[in-house]
Image (cartoon, rainbow, N blue to C red; front, side, top):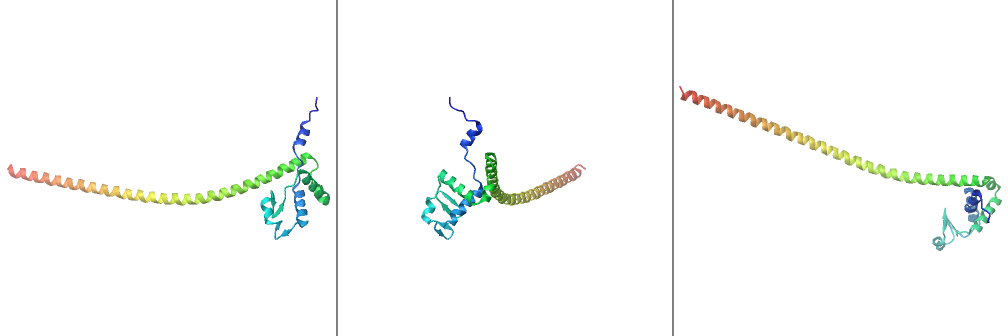
Length: 184
């Protein structure tokens, strides 16, 4: 029967040790200062830019194997004692720092997305506000116009009714006058 790895041992096998951002920054500084063809903010030629899989802050570095990266990190830690002092003591601290870094990265990404979204929403809200204000103004003008039209129709009906009443009264008066003349 083979030996069964404990859960913490299995996790240690699956997760590589987290490198601190300070160690990575120091490693990048060392590469930059080593003088690999500095040319106005770019390292290497422009032809290399398209082929490299790694780019950060105008530096161009070839992709390192795991062993090379570990050797470079170890050299950076040995070169600067402050980096070793800042390194996590155990795997739990390393994982905590790595997760905090990922959390900060995600927070920054979310902030960027939300800022962009809020800018677009504010622009659309302003446009919609102007549109609905214009529409509300047009609707109030239409309501005022319709109110005036109804008032004019009422006045016309009233005048027609009064004219019909006057005509009926005149006919009744004429009929009464004709009947009083003819009957006497």
